Image 1: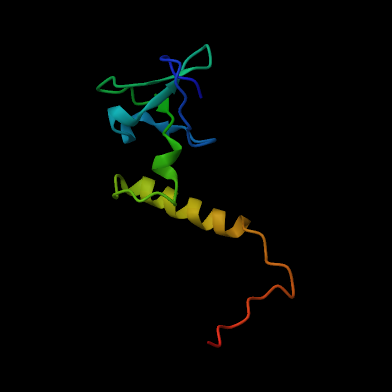
Image 2: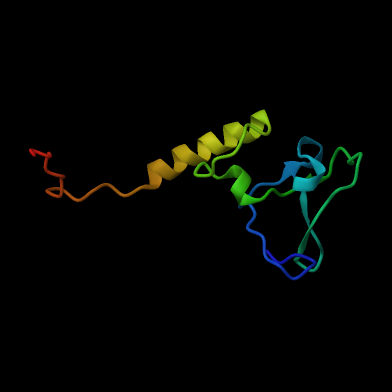
Amino acid sequence: MATLEHDWVLLEPGMRVLAHLVPAEHRWIELSDGRVTVYGVCPVDGTQRCRIEHRLACAGQELPDLWPWLTTLRNENGRMARRQEPEPPPGDAQLPDVG
C-alpha cells in the first residue's frame, strides 16, 4: 500500500488488529484516500483498528517474540504456507545418496 510519503509498505492481508495491542511504531491505519500512515497516537481509542506489516507476521522472517498473539499468527501463517505447497509429482521422488 502507498504511504503518505509515497513509499510502499506490504501489509498483512485481511488483518485489522485492535490498535492498543500493537506498539505505536508498528500501527498502520488506512486513510480515506487509500494510503496508509503509522498511527502513533497514545493512548489509543479502544475501538481503533490498525494494520501491521507483513514482515512481522511472516513465518519466514527471523524476528524476536514481539507479542504473544503475533507469535501465534506467525506460526499459523507458517502452517498455512506448508499446507498450500504443491505435492511433488509421482515418480519424481529423489533417489537416495549412495555415495
